[in-house]
Amino acid sequence: MARWYRLALLLKGRTDAAEAAFLATCGDVAHEFDEIRNEKAQMKLFVRRLRERCEKAGDVREGDDNGTPPIALAISRLAEPMRSATALFFLRMFSAAEIAQTCGMSVDDLATLLGEARELLRRAGVIPEEAAVS
Image 1 (cartoon, rainbow, N blue to C red):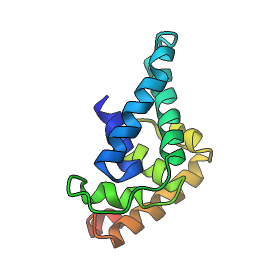
Image 2: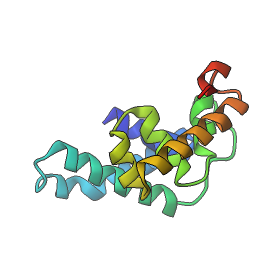
Image 3: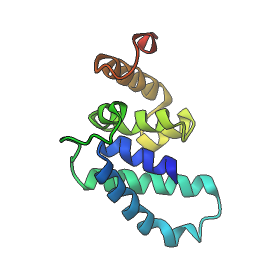
């Protein structure tokens, strides 16, 4: 559960918005989890619904939220699908192939996208210079 909340935080960029999206998504999928025994399938369902909810809820990533780590703010400001791909990769929730599938792209496109995201995060000062080296 904690990693799903962290995903919401990376997607929304504010603790209050992340908590609201996380809790609402929990309520949305709770009844479906009883029918899905496979933990990986449950995770994929939750992530898909959370991503949908975060996009539908609108952009609330701006503003002062002292409880949000700078890396979360920076990732939340990336455009989709870069934001979701980077968040899922950062949290190590899925394999590269699963992230690519979740975001609707090839693994090669995912690699390119993550390289671009790494450079943007480096320029934003939230990851060290050596992390941006290919």
